[in-house]
Amino acid sequence: MGKEQTTGKNFIGVTIVIFIAKLLGFARDIFFAFVFGTSVLADIFQAIFSLPSLLFSSIGTAISSVNIPNLTYYISSKTPEERYAYISRLFAQVTFWGAVVSVIGIIFAPTLAKLIVPGIAGEAYQMAVIITRIMMPTFLFVNLTFVATGILQVHAHFLRAAAISIPFNILIILALILKGNDIVFISYVTTAGWLFQFLMQLPVIIKEKYSFFPFNLQNNYTFAMVKQLVPVLLGNSLLQLCLIMDRSSGTLLDEGTTAALGFGGNLFVTITSVFIVAMSSVVFPRISKYCLEKDFVELRLMLSNIFKILLFILIPYLIYVVAYHNEIITLVYERGAFTRESTIITAYAFLFYSFAVVGYASQEIFNRVFYALKKFSIPMRVSLVCLAINLILNKVLLSYGIIAITGATAFALLVYAIIMAFLLRKEIGSFLTYDFLVYLAKLSIPLFFMLIIIFIFKYLKFSGLIMGFLLPLAISGIMYLLVAYFTNLTKEFNLREASNY
Image (tube, rainbow, N blue to C red; front, side):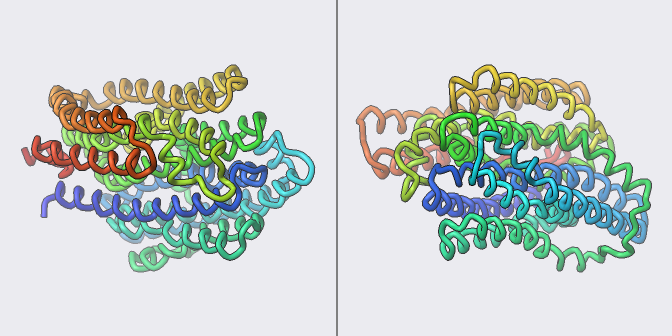
């Protein structure tokens, strides 16, 4: 079987597994919205939950982004004994520093809570302190999880790595069903769920002969990798940091704004990451290999194919969000404590966050190329500039509410995508070739048929979730896929290599 077929099948398989995981994530958010709505408790939980789900995960992603090229190097250029020693020392450092940061976070939870939810006081603030303390150990568990995930991806265990969030979401759903609005219990389960994600991967780690022992913190190469984490973290976390800042800003606005930002942002990331994360996970080992070998011809072709596939998926997504953002939020969340008013503000957040999709894809794909090239500072500098743009816009436009906050994030991510594409072109040459432009022109054909069907249903003013949303969604989606298939636009899913032409 050719490499392109294997990679293409891995992408489809990982996409399916991540889709199932994200579907359960939908269910988790639906249950949470049903129980808590856009209340003060929901504001507190969404703001503090951003620590493990956004900030800590960003740190873990940074570790994985450095570890994958390093482990690829050890596999290709070092002995197995040296490779095993490298991983054991990496585990040792992550365990030690993860535990230290977790303990410090528990001790200084009152200060952290004030920073995370600045608009909360009284009993609500005391609850924020409790939840912060409960969730601080996730710093250790999240980072162990991402180290393990990187190892699994290098050894092509993509499906196991993609499936770890499935039991995590199931645990939280069960907790919501059994304990209802017990936010403290939900927080404990969330922390335990992150530990379980790491434990799920241990059998494969052991099978591949990696170990925690000897527990040795003295290793210059591993320490050098740890020093790279700050630029990688800042460069690879622009969207996540923007979402955290947005939720913090939301506590200064009307009650429920932070929860709406959380629900809207989570829905955007959940849907788009099914494809973006699946793609970046599957191709990163090959990107690392091409960069190690300085094979920029193959690298450029791979990037071109990657973005053809992502645009094939994400442009229809954006069209559907523009046309049906209210209906989507109604279908997903509107029940129980999540009222019609909650739907309106969350739909605005979801709509404007969705315009950040190009920047999100660029963050996940372009950055990995720079990390594989050992150019860690470039994404960091661009990210800091765009983060400053988002921060300034949030301050200046705060009085305009949730639309301004989410729109600022989308704008910052778009600027990021443009700058990073230009800088990457300077490093490896142009990957957006004439062939790429031809593909985009052909893509307009199935998009046109899809838009016609959406317009017809809108023009005829069908109402209700079935006739006004689900039916046109299904018909237009089927039409899009059929026209794309007969115009040979789906062949790019093979992720071919230059040598195969």
